[in-house]
Image (cartoon, rainbow, N blue to C red; front, side, top):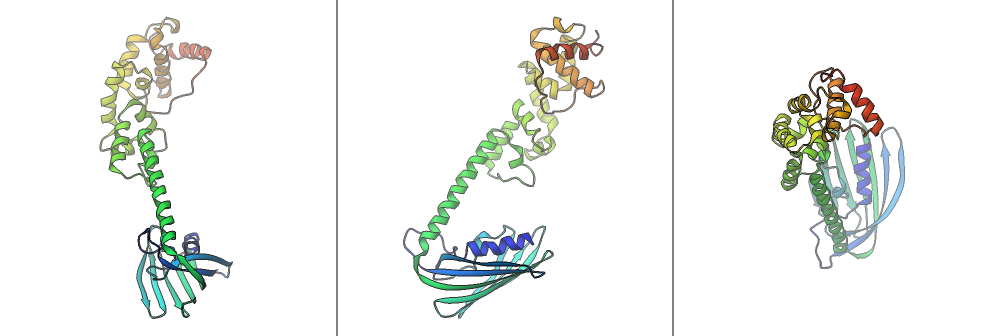
Length: 314
């Protein structure tokens, strides 16, 4: 029922604000005062609402079509004599169909009805309008076009920032809103960095999904990043994502040494490696996971000494 109500409510708020593309010249229009009343299946009614809207004198589309659900299409729109008729078909998870009809009473009034049906039930919207004078329909279109352009610019910035920060949910999955190939390329380039790989895997989207979206695999990205991380001494990334390199480094730098004897550059790595080993029951370090909260210096010493003891040969 919610989708039907949204569709019909859009017809109230956007009544006759659609037409040909925006133009800078004035376009003669009619200022209509329109009253609508909705009746839902089961007898529930929505109180009548009255709005004013400037409409082009030539009706090219039905009321509210600009606010329809993206899965809805207008079919068979016709102006014949004093009657305007159309059909609506909506697909998706809640398919529905509908019809609309408006009858003009001269140039200054009309009445109409729109009916929608779905598995949620039926809804009817009755309409009546009275012309109040002249207006510039072109100005309304320019306002709509300006709002749409501003929205497009804002979305473009959101996607550009999302690509830079490797925001997986807006690129990957059913709720993805960013489709520009340029943004996708930047996003996937970021995913192939140490920070991007970790960030993308901690946002509710599986790393495998992100990798597939970018035409690669998690294993391939790790194979590319892990040797670089070892060369760059990116120990945190190694401990979280690179089991083979981590094991070799731990045996070389951690095993057989007390915590205080560890080289300063390897203490955090040895502690993280020990945590990961304990978490997996003594096996290899697990796959990428969100970074743990930073412990205090005392906690690091105590936990590190306890975790490393017995795991790495001392």
